[in-house]
Length: 274
Image 1 (cartoon, rainbow, N blue to C red):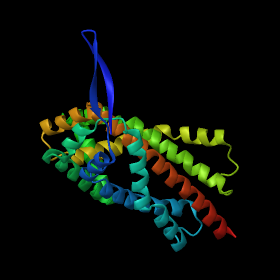
Image 2 (tube, one colour; image 1 turned 90 degrees about the vertical axis):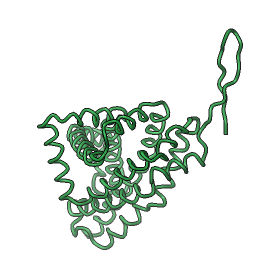
Image 3 (cartoon, rainbow, N blue to C red; image 1 turned 180 degrees about the vertical axis):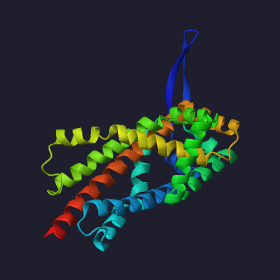
Image 4 (tube, rainbow, N blue to C red; image 1 turned 180 degrees about the horizontal axis):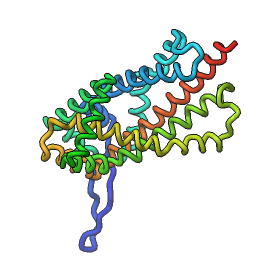
């Protein structure tokens, strides 16, 4: 699919073709970024989170019924299909050729491999704790690598976007509880919003810690000029469009999962209390 813009030059108008993203473009990009692998890791993260959630909110903890429900909710095929549809809609008028070329390059593929390896490693609580210590050490040493990681985070608006996504998910969870008619049902929508916004400072602090800990570990093998090239791509029009599309895709996926978890907590919790 192609679209055209009109540019005036010396009083004459002519059409300049602009390549808009096609389904094949999205498929190539997601393949290069190993999106299927990322979603599989997100499922593992979700399963781990659900254990803690059950221990905190269900009388009998993470029963088999709960585990079966969570496994159904974190359906990787549905997660990837939803992300692909939302992302495709968000970037349908964008030219993604340059970001596809970047992620298909040797450097791009190596960056993706490093990101995925680091995220897999963080599934181990001991590794996550060590990554936090590593971040704190970088702060104490005033390591210049922090400046590059900060530039990457700011180029992709990772703190604010992740905080907004987390708060939306928390609100969806409370709505799921309420709509199931159980825990939280007595809360009004304004009370839910107040409860969620009261968490904003803690969520922002946790998000910042996770991002810096993760990225410092993931990008440790990269040379400064390689990370700078990644930042440059992220700051381009195509890079910003891609990043915006990813957040527009992930947000409804996570809010849907959170709402489903809230509803399931309410239903199972009600049955266990009888």
